Length: 435
Image (cartoon, rainbow, N blue to C red; front, side, top):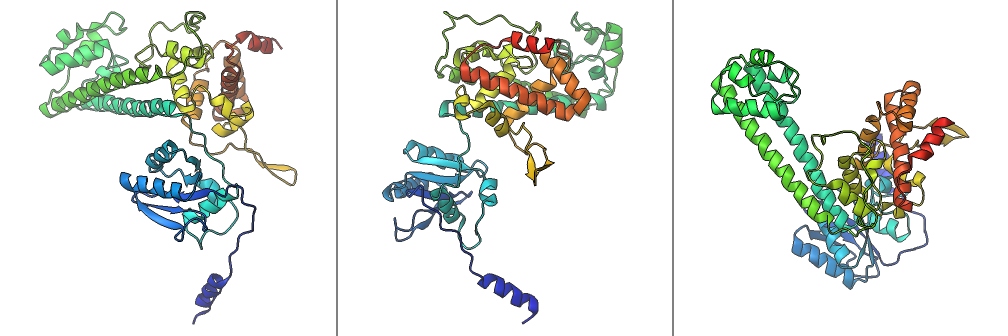
């Protein structure tokens, strides 16, 4: 036998033990989620066969639930694997079993041996001794809105792809309309595209469809509409225009469903007794992808504060934050620092021997953090305390670090608004600006 095989055999024969820790959750189970099979481990004294495997069909999940209840399991730990955990999570939660949804990275970083036991058994042991912490998950009503808004975000991205394909079809025909008007899906652009679809080819007749707000003259627009009207490119243009319209219809239906779900939220304030504050934004027209319903009024009723008073937060951004966090998220985080750390916006100091080796932020995939970063980036021209502070940070730290720092500041402001249900007070920051 070669020396390498001998070394491998010795390595396998070494006993791998874990420290004997006190059991804090004696009624805990561990579940390893898979696409087709689900492995479940209960305490060894609860069943002659403490590890079982179930299929991912609904009737098998119900059988898994009944087996856990017969074993006296009160709490379960499972990893958040893709979206496979959602059906089982909902079934167990409805049955009154506490589900501890944990990050897979946290389980791997914990000390101990995992190779000699199955994943479900390792999760059961870690949960029993209290080494796992559950991930933050809002209530079911919030999760329903969150699912629809994430779906809406996908529709908006798909519609943006259609616009790029419209540009490509026009360029292939050497029609330079997209370089003359800012948005070909605006009033003028859609009118011209619909006329092209109907068979109009005269550039002068097409240029007369321009709206009065377009800065380009009719002569320039007519010049841009002289191209090579090949049939295959016109067919592509028509297909992508129909697809874009279909996505717009889907987005409108999605907004209607979101508005209906927001009615199920408990009101934190009476809009009649405490009317909605006036708008602080000077924008006369809504942005392109803003919700197509009165999202600002609904958010004020469900949250108790007007989030659009905070600089950088528009109604669409505020709706996304509430859908990701819920109106009562501040109760789950003791301080604003905990909230900023959970978002991955605060420095993750790695200290060794009293010396900070690294202060980079953690790599956290959070839609709420992304929304706050976009809000922070929109403050680059704001004439207020937040805008001045962002520009100073940008000049000193650079754009990426300034965006993260400003997003962290907005997160702290957001936590205080939801924690104490107080309206945003810009005078506090004006006093800081005077200092």
